[in-house]
Image 1 (cartoon, one colour):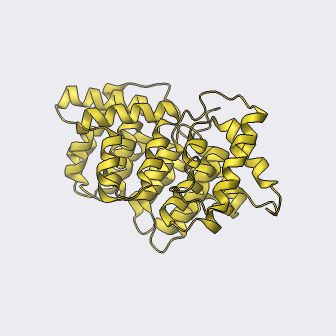
Image 2 (image 1 turned 90 degrees about the vertical axis):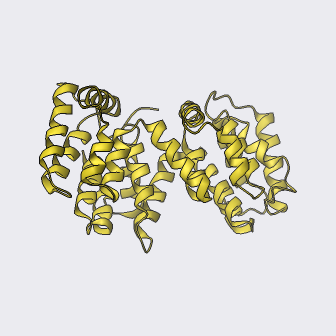
Length: 326
């Protein structure tokens, strides 16, 4: 994937200077001080995640504290702190903590979003950190906390090869198509469509995309796409959501993130946690493309949509807008 993020590395970078600037701002500021919030936001957004790790390491060496710990003393809660924390932590560490919280709370939307949209390499880093941090494997925790039968679907997603190779074989496409059509007749019930999970998770994305195109041409299907068929026929709401998220991620993960952001800013209450997760998490990957998709799909700038929904929290609106616009 060609990187199209909004954040790049700062060329004239000195982690010691940056660490001292942050320390000075935190020590001079008062609780919820606008000047402190703006100074830290600008500095974090103008550095890459790797550079922020260098700053945090230097800060720790100089002052024997982490930036997050000191920031928490001045700004101890709220979406601004959550955004700053997401920027400061390594991406796999932030994903790991988000996933741990979601598993303990049974928040399937967050679990599905993370497991369906990360690359194989990203998931490997996440799971390694998860095991070291929480002294428990991700698979074991899913088995422990997730009660329903879709836990097997999560385990399969963790083990999926994803885009590790890109070959497409006609025989394999036909085999996948047969499984999908059978699953459709059975209403995408995991207990009766026993081959469905393996079929959707053990093939590479190019192979699956080819099968999805053929599925759309099936007799009597009226050109309905797979995700539309799942939405219409799958009666288990959680399985429905996971399957649709996975299929859309395979087809176009950038467009999926655009849709998730739209849902986040058009719901009755803004889903700020998801906005932070996507905007910060994709800020060095494909956020520029996500913004373009958002404009094409919804005829509105993503930055403006977030500001209008979250503008009452000025500090949060400001820092998240800086990441989007940067």
